[in-house]
Length: 341
View 1 (cartoon, rainbow, N blue to C red):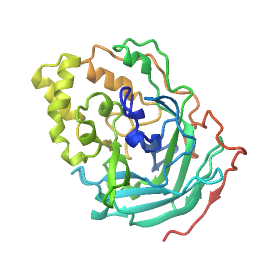
View 2 (view 1 turned 135 degrees about the vertical axis):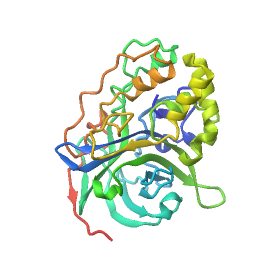
View 3 (view 1 turned 180 degrees about the horizontal axis):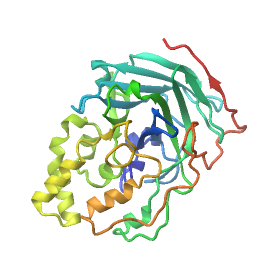
């Protein structure tokens, strides 16, 4: 559900939970609409195939975690925030954040302007936050804000209101940026993870923006997850076929609805209140219920699961503290100020 473990009947990208993109959120900063909060969640703390907990190491040091921003509506990135992490050693991990502008933002390299470097990843309940200029950055374990009755979804959409994610954690990358940093009044966002390719360079192993559809509508999964939003027209027929089968849509209506789900990007205008699916996504927006209504042509309206009650009202980092303790001693909250380069 959402992108967690990339679906109930298949596993994590390359068998590595740390590479698994789960959810993307974007909303104006509460109390200061001149700034925006951007959250990319990866690495769910539990999987289905195989079932059970995942590794306690938060982020993969060989991976590149990216937030893509399209400012002109062509589904090609004009801005990218790229995060890499150090090896997880002696119970510690650090992060480096780059920002890339222009044509290079659509690529897979490591270039760009360093925003923060060597900042600590949070493993305990207290958040370790870095502030530099007008940007605040957080990375680490948090309570998973996604809410959904997974077992009901697997049981032919027979929902009982049991929230699989109520006690689960996820690794969050959180940014607070001024709206001017987004480059336009309305932008389109998506996230992805990349790993080293066999012949050099990087390969994309996960990506997405909208919850659930890459899990439940995609037939050619590897091609979809390795593709780009600008090239998603080739998936409309497969999406339409799934909608016809599940929702009973007519062929013409299924094709029309499929076209509203692609490209798989999150539209966001920071000058307006956030509300999924039309404008960004808050931590309490019920993306799964929305998708159920689309998938079933309105026959199923929800799974009777409510938003989580551990969300925070301020940075750091809006997402609640993790349920599980993953360090021998709790890290203290730090605010490091660094010069931009």
